[in-house]
Length: 569
Image (tube, rainbow, N blue to C red; front, top):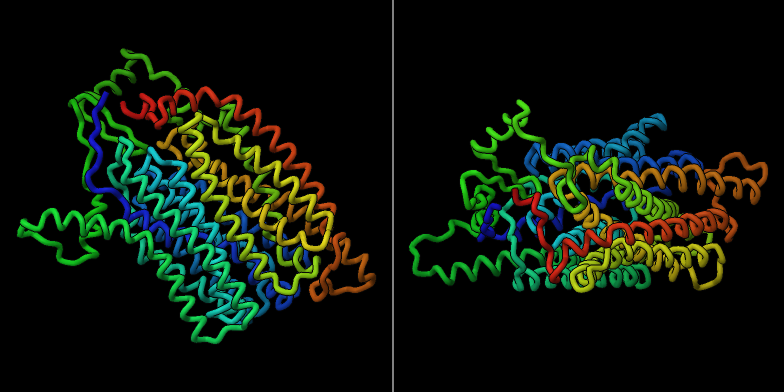
């Protein structure tokens, strides 16, 4: 077995940069902010609009290509491709909505939205895979933090949309076209692979807690400022001040590498060598050229894709090819799987279906949130989006942290939290269907939390069952459950039933793009179907949890994560 020494330069700069990239990766959550302009300016009906929402979700979650390339190319190149997708895709949508170019066919906009939101797959894959490999012993926490910032991004964009951009869909699309590529280019240098630590560290735990607390404070701040802006109609000077404070909160994770840099510098004050600049010194803290130390020349170290093979390993591979040595056995759950090996496992498909039923139903609400709010009589649907976003963030952050605690203390399989939250989702859908006064915001908040938990639980579960070596591919295949759910439940169900109700309320009216459906009947049947979907999902997640309990007993025996033997050979 190889003895691997933890890297002395923790990758906290990369995690701080990943926060900004993840906020940029949340661009797909902006669809409710400009969907009404697509409907009114371009004259689409609700069914056409929901199919554009499907394009939005397909692009966001089709990450098979970046999942493959993240093992072959450096993270900066993956982020650069994501930034280019933003520029091209959102640029076309902006040209259409601003009417700079008129007469663009519907299919062109559909493809443009796929390209635009596919940037989320490139950006999310680049930073998530890199940081989970950099922190292999804290997978749930890292997934919760990074996925949490994606969920919180809708609050960030709502703050920009309502305050700085004065509710202008055209300006928002222009910001997405130009601003997001700039963020990607600025951050891609700092997101890099580093030598992971293989022992639990109390200092690392404290740094994670600081990051989590700062993100919660940011979420509360954004929710409060959005409500204040809606109620008080704040002046421009106040709005820009609130925006500046938001930027400071987003920079908070950078305090960790700054503190580590200053502390290290104070210990080495006697040395004549000093950093030429703070940015260079921070970048040096994430130097990817540091390598694991090997205990013997005949060993191979494999830590989620960081693979070193020496001459004896090459000889072994040649011997295998000549039949002198038997091939390695197939991996067991908890070890590194090839993608094709994972595809034939029942646990893989159970996790996929449970995730599909949970997020597929939740994304239906997100894509139609503006119309749901109007049907229920809400005056300002941007508050609904901000509330959903904040609760989605809480679910992602809390799901990662809570599942991490119980998996270490009780060896409780993570999917059990998917069971609990999908049961709560059933209650939320029934509240939506009831149409009772005062339940709209409560049911939106409940759904947002449960929707977020599905993401933050699925990510570490997939890595624990099938390893980190091909995690990018496996994770992105799981994400396909989101657009599949959007197509079935949003495009083919919700949009179809909504337009039927519009025809009932306005018989003989030809242009459905200029009218809205009002009352609980607009989405009632959709909500009831989604409640049934989540009931099935909760049952299947119980089955999955029972099947994989032995895996968690093996991985977390003793209260800390133990890398499987295959990951150290």
